[in-house]
Every structure is written in C-alpha cells, then in structure tokens.
Image (cartoon, rainbow, N blue to C red; front, side, top):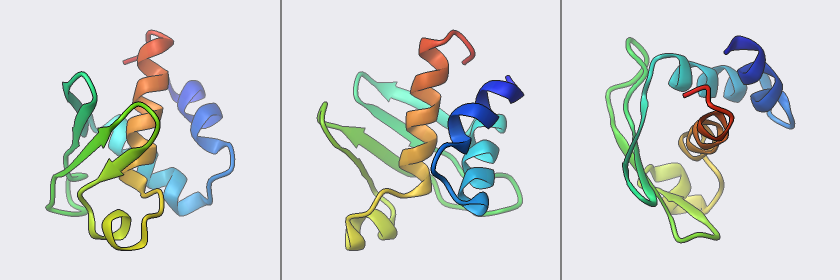
Length: 92
C-alpha cells in the first residue's frame, strides 16, 4: 500500500499536502457514504472537523472553508481522489 500511495500522491503535490493526504488515507479518514459523496474525518491529533466531499461527475466540492471560499482543490478532495484510485486498484 505504501508504494501505491507514494506513487499516486507524489505526482504534482507539494510535500506538506502529500503528507496530509497520505495521513487521511493511512488513518482510514475517507469514507464513502453515497454514490458520489464521501466524508473525510479528522486526522487523529491533527484536526477535529469532518468534511463532506461531493461530486457531480465532473467536479468535486468540499464543505471546508478553503474550497468554499477560494474554489480551489483542497487536501480533502485530493484524499478522496486518491481513495477512489486505490479502490479501483483494489487497495482500499
């Protein structure tokens, strides 16, 4: 599992975001709750808020302030996309 995470998450992400996404995955923080919706639970000892990520098939949206106010991809969306990739590969 570590090699897949390192390979997939490592492309185009800065270190701190890559590490945060890895922590979400390794701690089982990403949970699919519907066909196009996920929750991203807090990383133990890091934060306390659970966020909801949804997809309309083309775009992902997150309930976090960063995504809502700036409209930019956040670490929660990146964690969900990595989770989806890992499930397709049979690792999650």
